Amino acid sequence: MHGKRDLYDNRWVNLQVWDVEPPGVERFEHHVVKLHHVAVTAVLDDRDRVLMMWRYRFVPQQWGWELPGGIVDEGEDPADTALREVVEETGWRPKSVEHIVTYQPMVGMVDSPHEIFVGHGAEQVSSPTDLEEAGHIEWVPLSDIPGLMARGELMGSGTLVGLLHILASRGKPGVTVAR
Image 1 (spheres, rainbow, N blue to C red):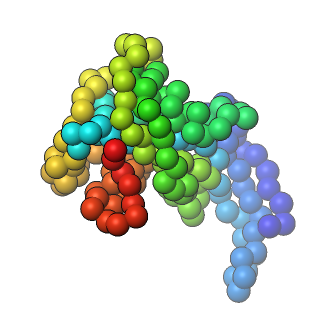
Image 2: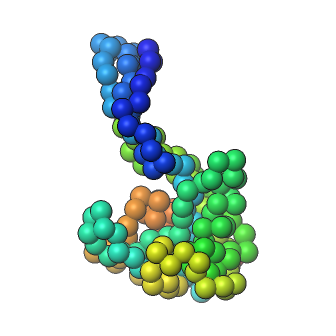
């Protein structure tokens, strides 16, 4: 990279222009969107269900199921964010969380690290404190996930990555997804 400059910056999004010269390509300017670092958690119970929220998202203008998650605060451990967001958004506290993967959802233009966790067991400790985020909260059977996916009712890449990991890992030796 030869340099970068901000075009727009606020607390939610930073748009930059980067002066780049990838190997074997002529030098050019590339737009980069920088978003927050987030943590998303799939909480499982001992009945093969996952804790989910039915919410309306105004950007795609649709209702859908999501896993709890949110922004990793400056200096906060992503595992602490995962626990905090589950409690704030659902009122349930996982007994433990396990990091599954960190990925970038739009690697070509957007920088927004996503940390995916699986939570094991949970106890209800309160009502949701973030009512805008909460929507309808439900323990959804894992057997329902393929149908929800086929109908386009699962929203957000973090939700899809977490649930696909769980479905792909079920029954495999050495991989624990539920306790």
